[in-house]
Length: 255
Picture 1 (cartoon, rainbow, N blue to C red):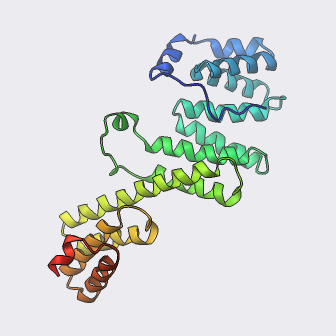
Picture 2 (cartoon, rainbow, N blue to C red; picture 1 turned 90 degrees about the vertical axis):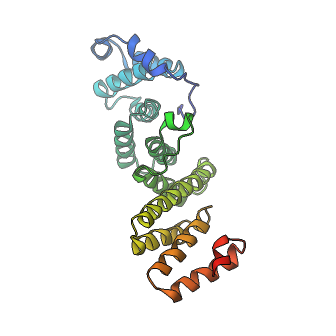
Picture 3 (cartoon, helix red, strand yellow; picture 1 turned 120 degrees about the vertical axis):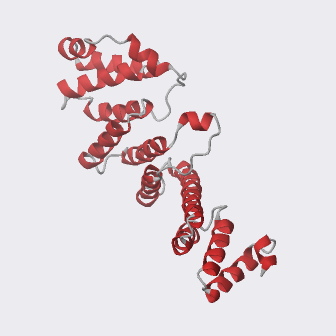
């Protein structure tokens, strides 16, 4: 059976066009008059054409009328992908969790786990900000954290999955995202003279994201914060770590 892991390319406004082209009574017509084969054929055609609004309507009708039919598993897989293409996070995640609960040993469980990560990454992103190169790493990272957990689960449960390599690359991106957020929070605490909170937040970068480009900034914040707190031994320890790893850092010249 076919899985829509990589769908056809969709233009920027395709979803809006699809929504406008659908009739309000499509659901009733589909649910009431067509066979499972006809419904699924229409859904597949809609997905291949990039009309995910219509595909979702058709798949939902098929799932509702024939919940135990021959297409039940494939309908769930296709719905997950179609919801993802519509950026419908709530329905996409709900269907992922439903699928994994009902089919924990299914051959496509790795794909569904992978899709959960993609869905959460999508929820974390702001397409317009990306297009305009606007830095919004200060936004709530909850979805990024969930995506990181999803990909970690995939690698733990299915290390030989065809999606494992891509998941590893995405996890590195997410680590950078989460480390950047931690630095932004630490910098905010610095501005507020909340030195203890700044040091604690910066330390999370060293503990959780030591393989990201934000370690040097974290050490700087920690050294400054410990200095302000009068924690000379802790500050000297941080400076020693900085000397070993970033000997050219300007802060070292001041001590």
